[in-house]
Image (cartoon, rainbow, N blue to C red; front, side, top):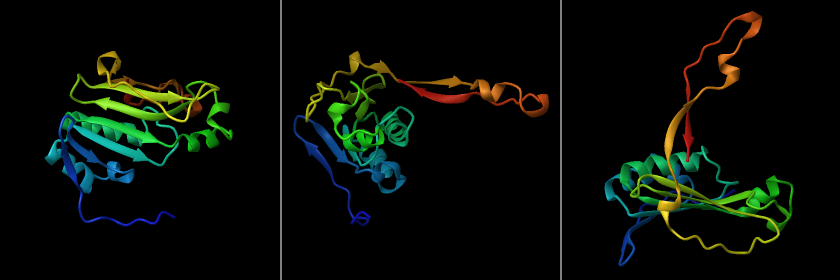
Length: 173
């Protein structure tokens, strides 16, 4: 069990040359109060979020929430996680034992630059103990929401009855 408790303050810093910076640690990103509310009022340039979770896949809570807040505040997001949890979930002992780019350790979203998103991936024999990512959203994919329907939901149901479902929104980057 984590040895933590709800704090009484959330600090937003204005850093010369970087802008307004806010840190939301793990669950603080998911909760509307205080993290989401403060982000909407403070309008930070950067929101940095370390998360203790497995790989940061498109569509998971970290991805959805960073995009939700980033679109509203036009903030830049950096969400990072520990690679070791994903390595263990893949049944490996070391990052170098995984396939190249099998582990997503970061997610970057730029709400100020045409809503562009980028996943930071690592793994394989060439994986190092650190990564350097250039912030260049013009080279990233543009984020958009597309509708997707599953063949299981639009096909035939039990006893030949057709099942109809509205399209499922899918986050795509």
